[in-house]
Length: 297
Image (cartoon, rainbow, N blue to C red; front, top):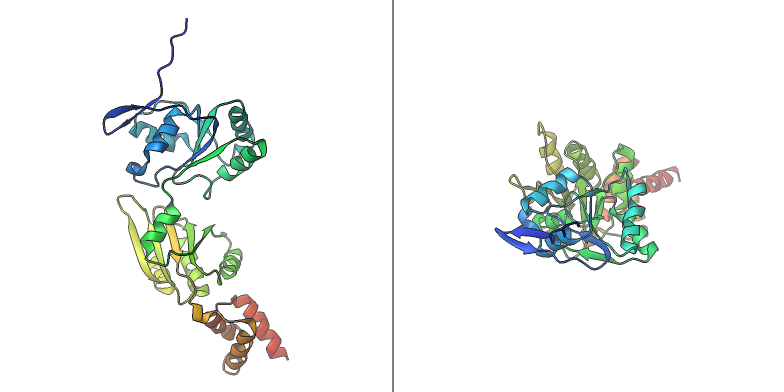
């Protein structure tokens, strides 16, 4: 006869606690972005008690399990195996199991492959349950000192210079603080591109949030671009926040034409478009084309 398995448990402040089995469903569990003490009790219960635990990297999640004395198997789920692992997880939920999904850090689905799994879950008609907790985007927002009443999370910028510039210009008129994730080896180039598109806006570069070497750099984008260009090496997880456009600088299209007409009397089209973009909040590329058309006429 097989001995009954021990009930799932976790340990918090030296106390062993039972983890009740969740109802069938896909649980999206937020985990700490750095400091493991930021985990929630509900998240620990779901991670320990669910029938299955799906994670991006078993080595990363393994450190979290070790910290809270949770012993269980993990199922890898990442962008390279999502096509095969995803359907199996959804089938498990449909069969009455509970599946906990965690990312390497923060809230699942935010710049990770969990979005695809959730779409499959809804298509299959199974329950999806969010377990809230840490998020690098909102943590950076509140640390930045920038307006937080409206914000837009833009994820990672494209790596190629042209696509990166076009993406930034498409965000010029968003009426809220912009939030980006960025890799340390690309931060200098990204800040330089941001400074060109948003030359007068305040910004914050938040590095290693909740970790030992947490640092928040604040200033205008040209100032931050110069500071990071001078650094020999940048390490750690980075979030960039850019302040919203000033209301008085956002003009209608016909106002932009008047501004361009005046500037073209003193500047070449490229320079006039750059200055008009600063004054109006309109995309520089669109203004440059307008300037060329006006110059031709």
